[in-house]
Image (cartoon, rainbow, N blue to C red; front, top):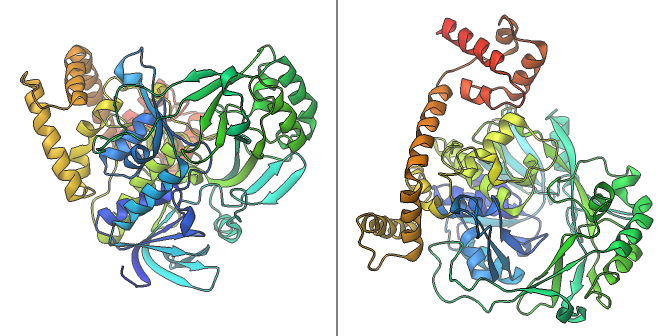
Length: 573
């Protein structure tokens, strides 16, 4: 391990975004410091014990194709595999695993330890060190100082974090962990566009007090698929999940406690995730429903804790107890940790470019929930790109930008930096207009050349990709002897959808031609364009698109406005 205080890249935060950013920057050749309050908590699964799902599983496979950590850690820790949408086409299937929390964290620690250019530093990042308008380091709360050419902020829910449960309030990004208050204050003082968001978590249960015989059992998939094609060896012992539902009595109890909920009392100002609402939201918004499904997910092989997915809540503790015990199979269940909501600061992602670089402070990159997203997978995807580009900034290398026709990572970042967010962003397959070509099973094929070009592959991964490329050649020629089953399936799917993929390739080519038409979205330029309404001007100013293609993806931009932009660009050219 090297011991220096001058780094190429400093990463603030040890969650999924921070761990991936630090690893990606180190793989690209940068000397990296990963700064976090607790080294033991690096890679912790702070909410649910699952990785992947619809849209999210695509992101995990793409992170893995860029030699990221999440796919391998998932396989190292998976105690339940389930391919969602199995009855539908490969384009919309979602690989998902339940992880042993302890084994997942251990895998992340092991993978980070294998990177000799990465040093982990225990401490709280109190402020950015800014000189001449550029970030040149990080000041620590203990008086320490780290110098760096580029900085990645991956602070998760810790920036100005506050925890809510009924009338209870405390400062924190997670239960028992203090927030990053001073850094959040500094970013606001720098007049960055910031707001508040909220997320939540359900109560954890002691699985030994659950009546599993009264629940519907959901076993792990029998076929031996993996999240990462580089994973080898036998699976861990597999555990079943249980399924139950809320009922009318449960809903009455929730309604009786809603007045104390910070979500309805006005105590929380930030918006929550539409696609993962609290149980209070579900009961309030869908009052006609007679029940909501709950998945009881084991958290480990040697841990009796169970995560009841589907009942995220910030209700008072006594209401949570009554709510749980009103549900079939949970009548005697004991709560080992009460659910809560957390509100935190985020940066409007429209302040970033496609490198995830912050325009207002050169040298600063942002990733994860700080950018207004929700979920481990979205955070990891941003972490890889922010890390690669922070290394590029420090070392004078080419930027690493995935476009939306190449990967869900590109869809994610393009949506964020052009559209902004009004609620925590969650990846869905419906967000990708080219999803027929962007399957989870072909992520390695799509992104391996990009990964090689940007120097983020280890020698082990390069050898693995070379071997798999040879298998694809053989499979396409009809020789499947010794070819991995998933490659055979990938090639068969390519052949089955070849006409549709060719049509989509033509659409992608047209999209890329539009992306090459440069537009000037400055206030002075936009005001000079005849026929551009004030509303269109405001939307374009907020998004600051650099090309016609980017302008076309700004929410609410009309065809007439695009035509006016195109004519203006032609005259300028």
